[in-house]
Amino acid sequence: MTVTEEIETRGTTTVADRAVQRIATRLVTEMEGVGGSSRRMLGLTVGGSEPKIDARVRGEQVTLDVELSVAYPASVPKTTEAAREQLTREVAELTGLIVDRVDITVTSLRGADSGERRVR
Figure 1 (cartoon, helix red, strand yellow):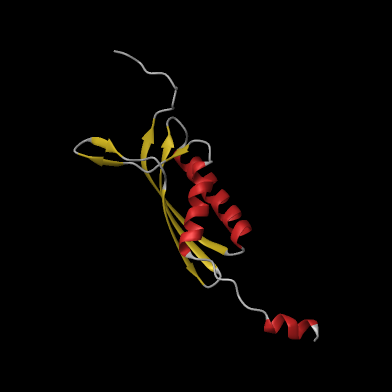
Figure 2: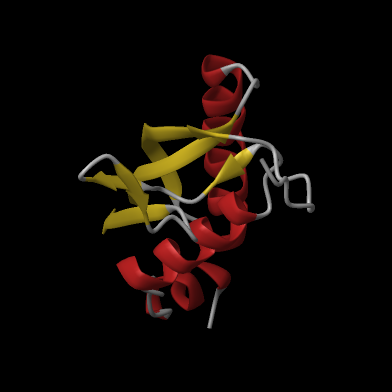
């Protein structure tokens, strides 16, 4: 069997949307200055432990929709651009797929976690 024949008889690997979603979520949670997506209900912040990511795989291409928070006073444009670049590069590297679009929605700005409580 020649190399060409061998390549033509190989199967394909399919990467599920959920697998890409989990990879992207892990990558975002490890980024500096980025946090979970939070919602507001009746004026109160609700939830927000993890970024919300929706991944859609179509053939060899991936589209990511990301909802996250940015640590104040970090620059929102710089933080989201860094997140977009890192997701594009690392998801492609880990999955072998082409990340054609990363849409990021910033749901809130969050204060820096100091680790200590303040009493007023």
